[in-house]
Image (cartoon, rainbow, N blue to C red; front, side):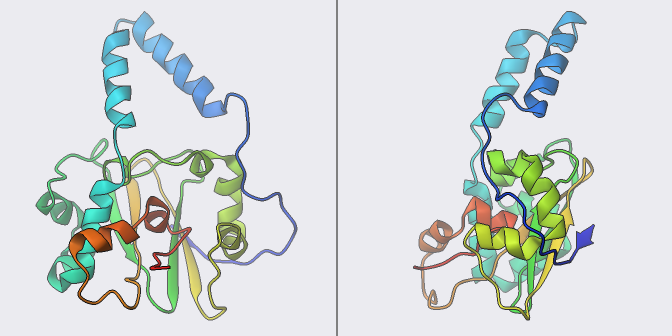
Length: 209
């Protein structure tokens, strides 16, 4: 669900915190329960964890770079993301959620959050950054997105509308950032290098600088 707004009260900046998080406590409790009930073994759980930990944003980078250079693929990516992902070899998404691709434009900038937990398209973006799961980001980016983006070093003109999209267990979002100026004629590999995980979440924008 998109949100837009500006809130000017002072808040603590986005930052990392030490110690175990609420999500780690929940994960440990669920893991122990699954093993105790005989639903999964410790080795099966570890295999799944290793698979998730090995994921990186590489596939997302390839998808965005192709969308920048192939207008027809870009339209398929926006209208039917799962099929467009499959064209690039991504045939399995986490628990098969719906994926929505939101395109940044000169007058609209999109940002992703999961206000309840940390739902996130891991197959194309890799593991979520620690700050994405922190309460500070989850609560503040909905209320004051422009200020939060500034803390990431992303300053947008006042006329650019910021839309915040709240992921759920059944729906994930992927930001299609704008292609930087001056990259005409660049190779796919050069374009992929400009695409970052954070730009596909929406807290930063690709840059040639």
